[in-house]
Image (cartoon, rainbow, N blue to C red; front, side, top):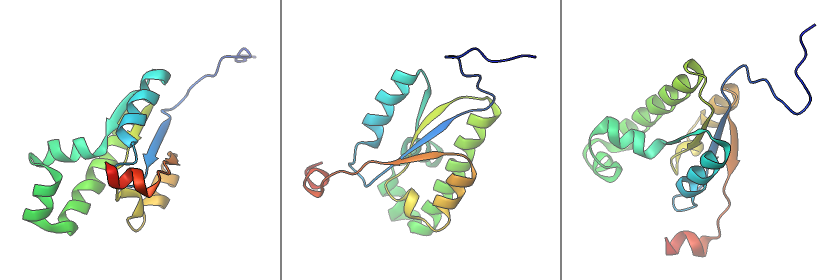
Length: 129
């Protein structure tokens, strides 16, 4: 019988932690530090969106509107999760400020096995950032 020794965890699939919170809550900063401490990959969903679009998020909103942005955001989220699973890359994912609030997003993340942590930041701090 093959048993895993105590203290060692055998990882059979990628683990994904999603960080949610309002814009300015610190998702990217906390995510970068957490990924470094865990030795995991860090992905900032906003950066993925901007790379895919070739323009900044505010520009994309202005040119194409929120509906097109949310479609692109959902595509990039699925792509990021797919890569983590395909390559078995444990990942810390900084979600966009509005990603988690989109209809179906919490269920999609839960069904994908993503542990989502809400970064609760005081309004005064959010406004100052």
